[in-house]
Amino acid sequence: MTLNERRDREKQQRRKAILEQARRLFLQKGYAAVSQDELATACELAKGTLYLYFPGKAALLGALCREAHQEMSADFRRVATSDGPPGKRLNGVGLAFVDWFRRHRETMPLLEYSGREDVRAALPDALRQELETDEFEPIRIMSGLIAECREAGYLKKQVEPMELACLLAGSSMGLVRMAMSCGELLPGSPGDFIRKGWALVLDGLVEGGLEAEHLLSPEMDH
Image 1 (cartoon, rainbow, N blue to C red):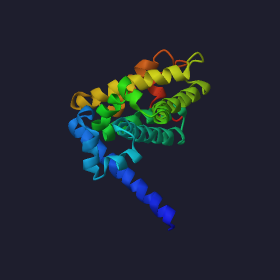
Image 2 (spheres, rainbow, N blue to C red):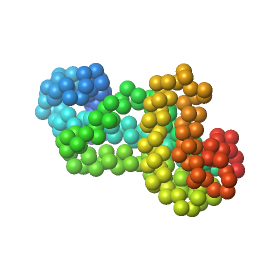
Image 3 (tube, helix red, strand yellow):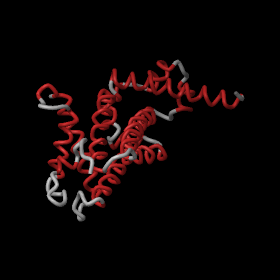
């Protein structure tokens, strides 16, 4: 390993350690209550050194949120590019969202806080644009699957994939929150709950008499 490679590795390891400490403090005390001095102390770094990695508290929050959104996109992309009919893969994206939410449930307050105007304004321009791109990527992946469903004749031709993807994405958060908080009251699994919720959204948009819930069925093979 060359000296430059070793330095790059050490820099990435320190960056990861800084983010881990920031996540811990943000979740423990709340983003607004954590100071830059406290972050530097927790990371055992001088404030100037911390600034070299992240120019402010908002940049740390933005980087944490980017990681979470990139993980969601990777999960969605893996399902979207797998084998099987598009309706089955669209259902798989819903299940992937349930799994992602389980892993990031405690981080959700940070993701929501990152949408505040004052936080976005405090982000460096490049980071703000990257975060917005990462936030939109899962919807873009869903839109592609919806377009496949439409082209395969499962959805009506007038369906606008991006509009429907935004609607499904927006409804998913509320459905998953309810599924996680009221899971013992549900007749089925959270994944079944998501599929039924999506079926209600899709009702009337399916083509040829096909039922929306059948379109999303994991057992669908045609």
